[in-house]
Length: 376
Image 1 (cartoon, one colour):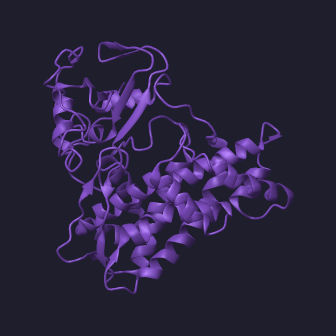
Image 2 (image 1 turned 60 degrees about the vertical axis):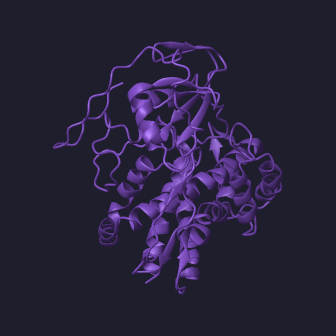
Image 3 (image 1 turned 120 degrees about the vertical axis):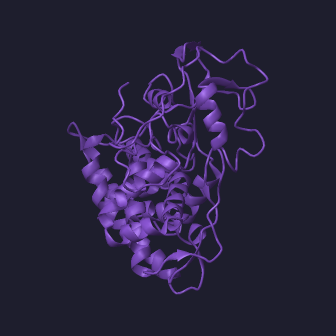
């Protein structure tokens, strides 16, 4: 796989040679479940990239893949991954984005205005935890109270292999039936009226698409938004640049996803024998794609620990790899853009509370769980 060249003026560190396998070095290999990794996984990631690019983590029950090129290739391999159902094709992008943007803008401004008059605010509990799910619910034209239910389903992680909560179908089917009979101006009505190759989408397809959007507006997007706000607030000079030049927001968002992805570990299962790092893994093997390690691989990124909104090619893997249109990624990007704009509009002097520094934690899901700010 060819990689984009490094920005001019930067020198990338050479990658260490890849051993064919580290499986025989039992007793010396680190584990994601070792004490302290939840709070600071980066020394472990560095050790894995340098000495254990493919290794069996017995405690986790999975093979660890840590280098950027290997993780990117694995994420794009059809033999590694859960079944993908109900995902919109590129033709649905024009249908989804305008409605999602309008809903994200309205929801973000409501949430931002609600907390703008307080002396101190936790942006995780009061903003980032609510915006993605509430925006998805608003876009679909569902009742506001459903936002709390969807948020809780996504927070507890009670989902099937395809990422959709088992109760979402029961929630959505009555709304689909009503939109079929009496369409409105919401996204669910648009999906009910959409056609592919001249055929209307089935109820199951509409329900799956709406469910994918709702789960995409769940915990991972909320965590990504919390990390994005934390990165900018923790780098006030860069926040000032974004405040003055809102066109920098997409780059700042992509850089945050590279440096601090919301799901640093993505588990995949091999549906067929697959060769990785000179070792053939049998069918059924679980592979842990370490997104958090890949995003800080010095062979791919210069000065990878630094947050830099001007990084020329963040090339994050937070929402997978490949050209497939992902509604979760679309919603997340809109939540980041509209959310930051709304916060800066409602709170022009937004800054971290005195003495507070964001402290991300977690292995499978990682972000600050507390983000104390002063509105002005």
